[in-house]
Amino acid sequence: MGFGRRSIKASPAELKAMVMYQIAAIDGMAASLGLTLAYVKPHGAMYNDMMANIEVRQVIMEAIASYHRPLVLMLQSTPEADTIQAEADAAGISLWFEIFADRCYDDDGKLLARSKPGAVHTKDKMLAQVKQLKEQGTITTVSGNVLNLRADTLCVHGDNMDGVNAIQEIREMIKQ
Image (cartoon, rainbow, N blue to C red):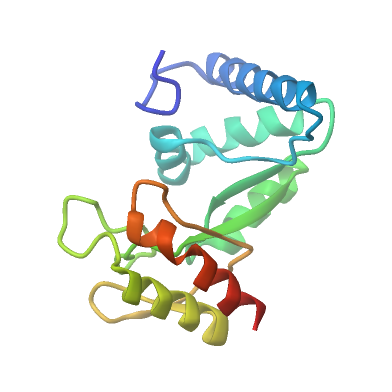
């Protein structure tokens, strides 16, 4: 169906059922390998839809809240983190706010579109962004504005070899 790869037009009930099915499927696969699913991070288009559309985000939160055991929702940290945290509190779920180490941000705290120059950081820019985040709790946007962002976790995209090659350095920087 392209779940997560493209926006899916569905009623709230259909979307909730799809999300719950996917959670249960991956939870079952993890259990068969002796692992435990701890969090949910919607993929690709669904992630973007969740961040742009409160109705989609609320349905995803409802699906997670109705699962038979607690799971954390991972989503992008934005300047609206307090509002999104209040939504999660109302739904009865926990959140992890994510920062993208290898991506540039626009001035409203969203990721700069990959179609724009500088959207994907070089290794040096990525390490500088992680250092700034660790030391100051901020990131600098494409136009030089500084945003305070809550960070519980960092994402490095696997399709960015500079990012993959910097993971060990990022870990060391965070441990210091």
